[in-house]
Image 1 (cartoon, rainbow, N blue to C red):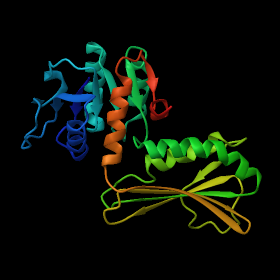
Image 2 (image 1 turned 135 degrees about the vertical axis):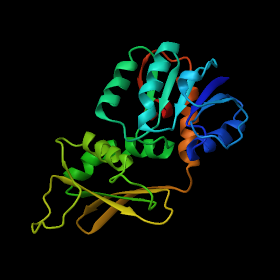
Image 3 (image 1 turned 120 degrees about the vertical axis):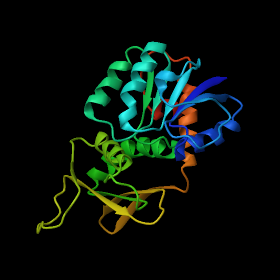
Image 4 (image 1 turned 60 degrees about the vertical axis):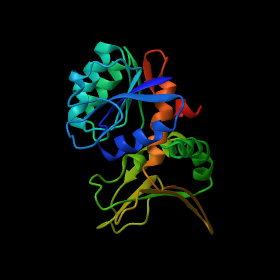
Amino acid sequence: MTRIIMHGCNGKMGQTISRIVKEDEGATIVAGVDPFNGITNDYPVFAAIADCDVEADVVIDFSSAAAVDELMNWCEEREVGLVLCTTGLTQAQIDRAEKLAGAIPVLRSANMSVGINLLEKVLTQISGILDEAGFDIEIVEKHHNLKKDAPSGTALALADAVNEGLSEKYEYIYDRSGRSIQRPKKEIGISAVRGGTIVGDHDVIFAGEDEVITLSHRAYSKAVFGKGAVQAAKFLTGQKAGMYSMSDVIG
C-alpha cells in the first residue's frame, strides 16, 4: 500500500486525485497540505508541509511554484519520494530538483497523462523517418481561456520528443506574423489556442506532399493527469534515489 501526502489537496487536481485514490486498493492518502481550508477531506490537512508529521512513502505535488522549495527541503529531510507535478518552476527550482534526486527518488514530467507520454515515445520513433521523406512538422495545442502560459509545457515536450528523433535539432517557431518568407525546412511551428473550457488538446502534424499525418491527444477531464500521478506515486515507492519520468512508469 502506497502512503501518499497530497500537497495542494484542496485545489482542483488535489481533489481529483483524492477521489481517484479512494477507489485504488493499492494507495491511500494519509495527509494533505493546503493553506486554503473550507473543504472536508478524509485525511488530516496541514496549512504548510513543515507542519506535517505524518509518515508517508511519497508526496504528490500539485500546488504552486512558490511552495515547492519548502516541499523539496521537507522531502529530503524525511527521505520521502516526490512526484513533482507543479508547473512554472524556475530554472533554479528545476536544478534543485535534479540535485534532490541524488538523495531521494523524484519523478517530474511535463504531462502526467499516460497517453501523452506514449505519444512522445511514438514521435521519437517516427519523426526522423517522416523528416527524411520531406514532411514539415507543426504542433497545435488548445487549452481553456484561464491558462496563462503559452505554448503549453506539453507542446514543448512533444516538440522535444520530435527533435530527439531527428538527425539535427530544429528551431521552434512560435509566431510567424511579420515574416514574409517561405517556410524554412528546419523548424517546428508551435501554435497555441485559448478558449472556453478545453482541458487539453494537442495535435502533431506531419505535412508532406499530397498527404498529411496527424497524431492527436485529447484530454476530456483532469482525471487523466490525476490517474497518471497516482500511477507515478505507486511506481516511485521503493525506488532508489534518482530522477524519473512518466516514461519510466509506462515502461
